[in-house]
Length: 67
Image (cartoon, rainbow, N blue to C red; front, side, top):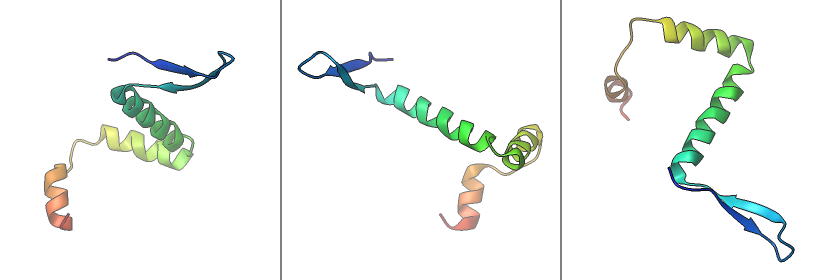
C-alpha cells in the first residue's frame, strides 16, 4: 500500500491528506459497515445473512434483474 501524504499551509499547519486509493476504498467500506451496524434491525439482518448457507451468485441476480 502506498504512503499517506500530508498537505500543509504556509504556517506548516496540516490542512489535508492524500491517501492511496486502496486505503480510501477500505476506509469507505468500514464507514459503510459502521453506518449499517448502527441500526439494530440492519445489524440483525446482516448477521442472519452471514450465517445463511443458501443464496444466488451475484452474476445470476444481475441477469434476473436485467442489470
